[in-house]
Length: 147
Image (cartoon, rainbow, N blue to C red):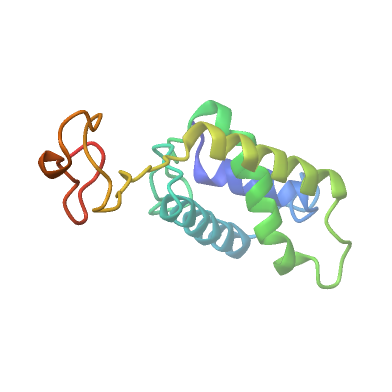
């Protein structure tokens, strides 16, 4: 679990917008925090629920799982790069590859998949069909296999 400031600074470091010699200004930290909150919310919208909590202020704890830290940092760096790359260097291909592989991991570990019940045709007979023609039972209109 990490603070929002730590995650944002790590992402900014990947794109060259933060270092010991030239630390990120408070506005950059605020932009990074807003982008981080938006990224976590968009992940929740597609079913990736890792228990992270939105940040009220940059110093709050994100409460992310330890194994998701790299995925969050690298994907945040990808989202922040357009803010800092206009006059500078492009994002490193290694950052892009790592962000993609970490996103694949996060999806496989934390994305919740919902498989709906199969709705069958109302002309499909129930059971083995071992009774007479007129006695056969059919599925009702819109009935599911588990219903």
